[in-house]
Picture 1 (cartoon, rainbow, N blue to C red):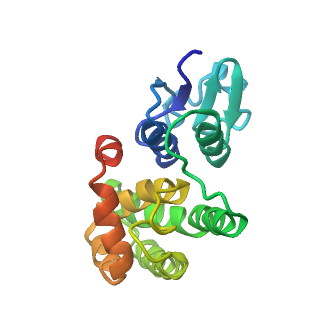
Picture 2 (cartoon, rainbow, N blue to C red; picture 1 turned 45 degrees about the vertical axis):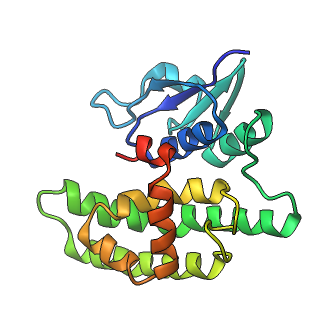
Length: 206
């Protein structure tokens, strides 16, 4: 059985999610660089792997996938290693709800409207940042309400929800506003401190 291949850029939140899942499962893989923001645009060959030209894409023994959640679930179910999804229907549904909530309501404001705007723009749009922080606060409130008692988002066991959240919040806390807002949610702050110390996260969220 060949090593899985991940196509994408190491700076991408969603590439990082897939890499975290692979590392937590103890699976070696190859990262094939694809920079969708390159001056020449998305490489033509890449559309065979992802028809929409987004990252990541994934390949394993000729089986191709795109969409991060689909890749993460496949990796968890197709390979040996720690189980990263709850067995019972309701906890699994809550895990998927957290992942969907992060995608729909946390990723854009935390990463693009706050972190990228503050870190990469010569003249940041303060109105955009303020609105991003407002929406990030709502997302953190929702995450706090969904978090189960215990070390991880779903309780005592690390799941795909933790690995989905970590790269998003990892970008958010690169800026002071993100750090200050996260500190208002003690349970999520404690969770972040815990997961940021894991080797897989430390190795991939730079």
